[in-house]
Length: 120
Image 1 (cartoon, rainbow, N blue to C red):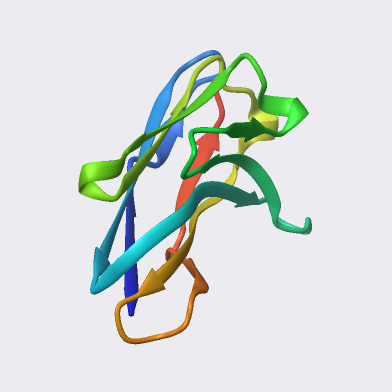
Image 2 (image 1 turned 135 degrees about the horizontal axis):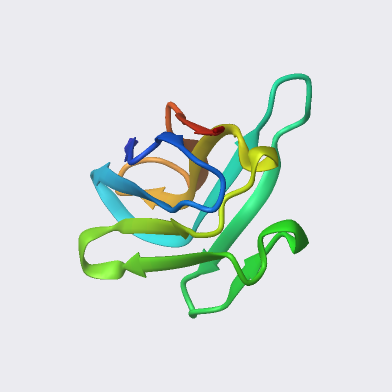
């Protein structure tokens, strides 16, 4: 199986920055995709940013130019640098991985979520 551990959330003032980290562990054969989603109260979970194994990245329009996703392929980690944060970025942020464990079928895995609150 694949386990995901996120860190880096917290409370920040508008205009501030945070960096989220997600580490994938377990008996992993391959990772095809790593990304970040978020869910605000009363709203559906939405894609924030994703990175494919070939290096292609994509971002939600609402975060383009402010957030940057990066990966450390050797350590099976993904990061989300969030700058110029706005109150509307407040949400629980989830790490998502599309991976093939050694002894199971390929699947989608989720972290436990980390709270990001942007408020003065």
